[in-house]
Length: 92
Image 1 (cartoon, rainbow, N blue to C red):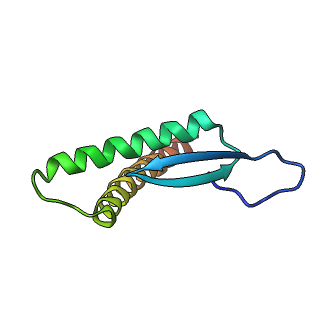
Image 2 (image 1 turned 90 degrees about the vertical axis):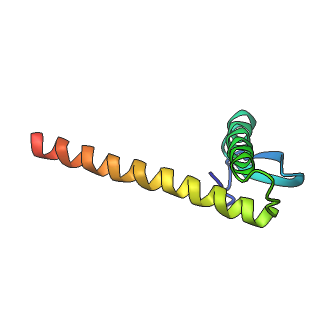
């Protein structure tokens, strides 16, 4: 998503807000795509907050739990992708 500055390539600057904090994201992706990511993150934050009921989690705790959840999803997708790739190779 985030890319180093490359000459002759137009980069988008998108200002986002997560948990009340503002960030500027610079990259090739569109503002719409970045905002979709923000919506997904905010949804995960809300789900985690609801799951913890009355417990007041800090922004750091919420961030770590969201990162853990996203890493879990990504790892499971990679494992599934590798299994499918292996099956395709065996089928050849």
